Length: 506
Image (cartoon, rainbow, N blue to C red; front, top):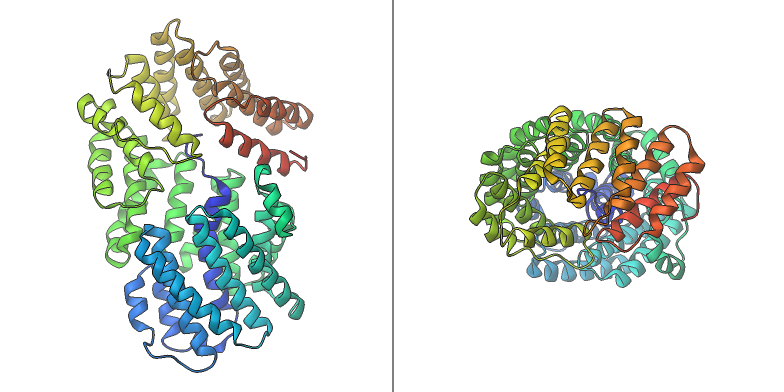
């Protein structure tokens, strides 16, 4: 539950940049993209080897459309560097490169290919602005990019590259949280998840590189929206057969393996690729290292998790997963009996604004600054990890022990029931899962009140799985009404997504 991503932000920051960058290159709109050195540059960017890619780009301006390609690549490299590092220097470099590329694009005749080029460039600017938390500017630039796509599609209807781009936008619009619906209204976006998915599927079925891009985005939808890791991995495995060293595909597959409780396999995959990725893409290697450390944490192998987390934190400079890494390193020390070292990390947990899990982590960490974990707390956390790693028998034993040790402490007992319910649900024992979710819902919580709406939410998911749509909708709405807890934003997001998938207005 606590590892869920904000889909809107994730898609813009992770999936959209990748799919958007390749679509222009694969479309055949600008023939120069297939000429040297641009084809090699494209391959190096896909490997995240930005220095080598930049060295291959001509220093002197080129003529005609080739100059647009040159400027586009410089802008794209700078954007990726900023997205991965949040370094102000890379941001300044991107802004300069984007202005140079945009000015040149404005001087070209508005053919369908040039409109698409403008759309791609403007979308990159929106992506960077989202990273800066400048959502208003990002919305307006995304609107401009969308309009460019639409205009290009009018000139060249049926083009799979344009259909793929429109499909991404239409899906994203359909999945915008209700609290941002005003942005959709004032920017004039239209779309739905079903429309976007349909367009992406058509693009995926077309064949060629465009098919790969659309398939990758659909794999992301399977994983982060539909919560269906096996279906996502089927698409990712097809892509990895063609691009075995592609770090983006590998990382998403590792996440899919984690979500499928195949944590050890995820660790093995990332460890087998870590050194080669570190050699070719040192910035991106941080993400791989974090997944390795996180995997060992879920496996309760803290002697392995601790050095990997430390190595990650020694070199990692951005804020995106900094608090999460610190929290899990602190937990690794605490759960392995090294309380004083754990306290050093719990003391510096600084949640970002509106980040539910980081707020929860900071509050949890404060509890243990003045005292070690109780035996009940340790059993609970070890049980959570065992569940996340797919060891359901071990999880049940530890969670039942936590419940026994908790005694009259309803917070611990209620959370243990909730997590026991998750174990039974994942092991396809819905009746037992429902029993424990109801026990968790009815516990008299002093602090962890978020467990009530989440227990109700999981009951709704069980009803959906058994075809009881009416009962499920009622429970989803009941959970939504309980909005005074630390995970309010995350819960609302989950409920909205489920209701939209059912064709119900949130």
